[in-house]
Length: 313
Image (cartoon, rainbow, N blue to C red; front, side, top):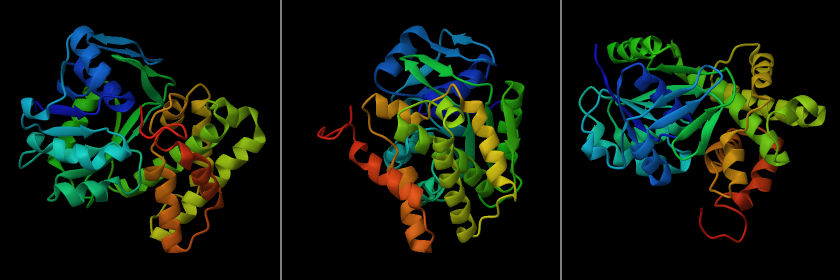
């Protein structure tokens, strides 16, 4: 089955996975903006990865989804603070059977998207990969870990997702079609936010978690809080969630979370969608989250760039 795919947001996640699909011959259009878009239109897209470098010299890239038209799959890979605007922008991509798969970092992203797009359009997903844009038109993947998970929000079997699963696996992407996508989203969140917490508070890449036990304790504490929050929400995580998530962090020694990349670049950060979401949800459920409260307070002045700068760069 031939699928038409649009990647909304061609950064570390969308650029990498969309690029892998394009290399394999899939029909992929990238929705991007700024210097990254200009570089892709001029020089194509380049991927640097321990799983193999790639260069797609000619890609379909635009800042106007209307020029792409209706597609079968939208890989939704924007920053959490852009979700509402991006949902409105992708409306020209959506037909009666289109799946918009959320490959975002938050735990409430699908609810936000569903409120805007309605129907059965939104699909849950996770992208496990330490990657980012290192220069316009170039994506760097920092570790061998690279996997996609997705599934219908109601757990039903889905022909449209089986077709996308086949396209992804044919492209050599490690892919999982899961029945309980909510659990998968929380398990990813339980890695992502502790990793971001430790690295952003220290302004250091992932190896700080290995080299400094006291920093590792921060990550463990943050992870325990997220697991407790999931339990309070009624989300069933496996009994070894803490141990397995901490073991996975060892893959990220040479990586930086995207929040740290943005923080060091003096850009807007996803604080409200990550730590802010934890703090607000925890308050509503009566769950103590002291590590997240401290991290949220410490990083809040940088949410729109360095303190004193009115808007993000």
